Image (cartoon, rainbow, N blue to C red; front, side, top):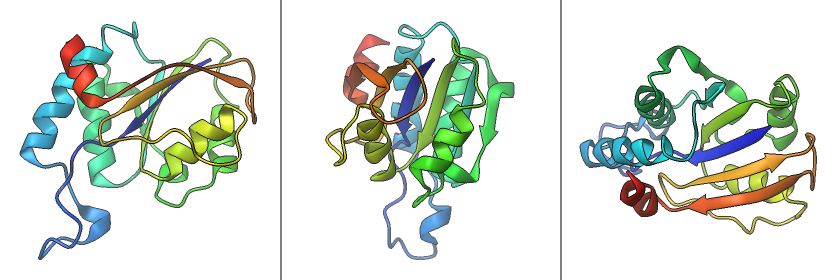
Length: 163
């Protein structure tokens, strides 16, 4: 399986009057930048098998921009396991139900994604940080700690450049 771990795009700032943190959407600029980054992602991935996303609007919007770039809107699935504070163990449970040759996209939040990526690479502390809109690709031999190999980790600007 190849896992593409994506942090949501640039969202409305935390603490913005009238906006609850869990309901913060992408900003117009965040949408535009993420749409271009998603086009870059189409140059690196043929088509995702499935796109799992956190239930929060900023993650769902990011997932839909990726799905639109691939013309794969029907492949987006919202899962609570990608909510902020979700457990790595729960995400691994979701991944264990995927085919060995699946191309799985996960859209979520920091610091959880950094912990997940680092765990899959065999590390106890997060060493991979995700800027908003960043993506890493991890090739998985099996599901578990240290079972993955980092293929690439790209910042949003690099993805936009590829597009």
